[in-house]
Image (cartoon, rainbow, N blue to C red; front, side, top):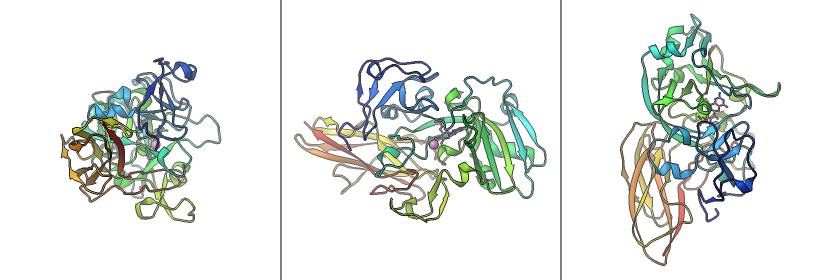
Length: 400
Ligand SMILES: Nc1nc2c(c(=O)[nH]1)N[C@H]1C(S)=C(S)[C@@H](COP(=O)(O)O)O[C@H]1N2
Ligand SMILES: [Mo]
C-alpha cells in the first residue's frame, strides 16, 4: 500500500456543478490514490459537496474518508452515491410519485407519498455499505468500481415498515420473494433493468423500511428521492432507490441482478483462490463486521507521547461487542472504549490511546467483534466480485 493512505488533497478548488462535464483535471481538486489508478477528481454533484468521482455517468461518488472522523452519522451532502444504470430522472415530483404493490398479493394497490406519511413511522440508524466497498484493495484486482473505503455511510432513516405495506396488500399463499424496482432505466435495450429481491421472511422483518427521510431531511435525489428501501444489516445492493414497484413473486427471482450479479462463493468467509472455479454461489446478504481508525491515516507522521486513536465499527446487525487496538501490527491488543450506541445497525464510535516513542515506526491496527461472534479476517479474503472485504486494517506511522 502506498504511503499516502487517504485524502491527500492537491491542486486548486474548482467544484463543477452537474459533474458530467468536468473541468480539465489540472483545474480540479484531486484526491491522491492509495492504490494504482486510484487518483480521483473531487466534484460537487447536485445536493452534494465535492466527492471523489469514480464515474460521472452513472454517478459513482465516494465519501472522502476524513468525513468519518467527524461524527457517527454521515451528512447527506457527503453520503456516497452509486447507480448502475445511466437513465436516472433529473428531477422527481414527490406529489405524483407512486409505488405500485402487485404480484402474488390479495389486493394490489398504489401508494402515494401522502399515503406513506399517514402510516405509522419508524426511525432507525443504519449503515449503508456497497458490497464492493474497498474493492480497489483486492489483489489481484477484480472488475468493478475501484472503491477505496468510502462507499459506506451511516444515517438515521425514517419511513414505514415494508411489512405494513405488504400486509395491506395481503401475501398470496405461494409468495416466495418480494422484488423491488426503481425509476432508473438502462440506456441500451440489452441491459437488464436493476431489480433486487428479498425472501418473504427477510422482507417482512421488523427493521426493513420504505424510507422517505434521511438524517431528518428528504433523501437527496442521488440517494433515491423521494423514497427508497432500507434493509438494515444487509449490503446496500438491496436498498433500491427511487422505489416505484414492489412485486411479490411466487418463485425465486431468476433475473440478472439476482441470478448472475451480486453473488458470493458459498465457502468459508466467502473467499476463494483467484484461480479457483466451479464453486457454488449464493446471493450476497448480511454485512460482515468491520472497523476503521478515522483520525490517523496510513503513512502519517505523528508526535511522540500518549496519542489518541479513534474510529468506527459496525456489523450486519448483531451490534458491536468490542473493539481492540494494537500498536505492534496485531501481536498484542488492548480494548478501546465504545461511545454512544445508536442501535445495532449504526456506526459505533470508539476511542483508545497508544504510547508512541520518538524516532520509531509503528503499525497501528484495530479489530472489532460482533455480538454474534463475528470477527475480522487477519488476511484479506478474495472473491471474483470484490465483495465483503473486512480485513483488520493496518496503519503504518512514523513518530518524530
Ligand atoms: N434504483 C436503484 N437503486 C439502487 C442501485 C441502483 O443502481 N438503482 N444501486 C444499489 C447499490 S449497488 C448501492 S451500493 C446503493 C448505493 O446507495 P447510495 O447511492 O444511496 O449510497 O444503492 C442501491 N440501490
Ligand atoms: Mo453497491
